[in-house]
Amino acid sequence: MNAGPFRFKDPLSFPVITAAALQERSEGVWVGPPAAPVTRLRVPPSFHDYPVGESIFPPLHTRPPVIYPPAFALKREKAVLTGYRTLLGADGTFCGDESFTEPAALKNAINRLSLADEFNNEATGLVKTGGDDEATEFRFEQNGRPVIRDAEPIVLLCSTEPSNYGSFLFRVLPKLRTLQNAGLGQFRIMVPQYYQSMTDYLSLSGFGEKRLVPHYANAVYQLDQSILVSLRNSQAYLDDESLAYYKHMRDTYGVPSQGRRLYLTRRTLGKASNAAATRVMRNEEELITALQAHGFEVVEPSRLTAIQQIRLFSSADIIIGPSGSAMFNVVFCHPGTKLIDIETEPHWIHAHMCLFGSLGLDYGIFEGQTEDRDFSVVHKPFSVDIEALMRRLLNFEKAPRPQF
View (cartoon, rainbow, N blue to C red):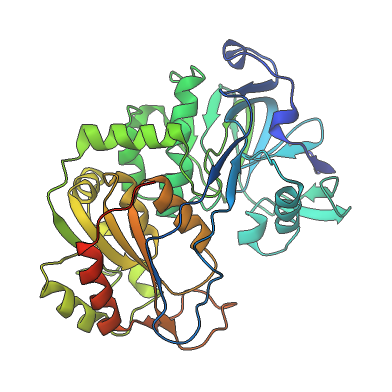
């Protein structure tokens, strides 16, 4: 297996080919309409509360641009898939499911791959050997991982954070729209399937298990003909095609809004829950008691089937809960649904705001308090000011929904 050196090549720099050519033995990139970058503006929250001390965030009322390149499908011959989403080409280039519209974003991506820890390196086995920019060279180390060979054409829906449920919702599932637009619906699909719900969502989208090939980041895949489908929503701001996908899922499997009031808990209900092990709310029992007195249902989405989650979130009028993968189920909410997102660390606020705003939710940010502000340690226990939160909740429910 080629050990390199390898240099990054932007997927959109490959020769442009037609959708029909993706099914032939040739390399190139199909570019979806509008075939040019699209700019959107982040939607600010209806409120941002931090009852104690200073906020952990910069001002959230600003509307920074979110710039996305066009969607694409990249055809490669005799390539190696390694880690979460990286294709190594026989020509000494590598790429992933992202194109970069800004040099700073590309530099950041290359710098992350240059790090030694598996999360930032995306388990690629790539090791930096020289260079300080997009021309940085890497060598590839297999590191004893098994090699799986596949000679038949296959479409790759792989992306970063493959075992994360929230990542699957906003990164992987919207790729199905690109797959269909490029006329690739008949191909086998390699896709992360770490939870049954992931497989179920693919099945509900019309892709049965017989056509699905599980992707695992701890293996290396030698692929004769692979088609890598692009990441549509790198900043979690859902584009029009992604919104159309989730509207279709909601219209097909969901229900009209039924005025339900939901609290999303991370605590353990019944058998052990992975979600309950981190980011624990220390005074959650008191909060639940206060919410139940106002008619809120306590739900843990990870206990539900895919269809149950679609029905639950589409039925809601207002949702409150701590940030996390469960909150990404708001993709199934009707526009205008009210949402209070309890945030406790600064790392992901931009992506969360992009998601909520792009969905047309009437959302607010309420900060919880961790024991200290050393955010180099993630997912710390926290508490919330229950009186302040309940005051905000009751006023928020009465407030008219904003018009954008």
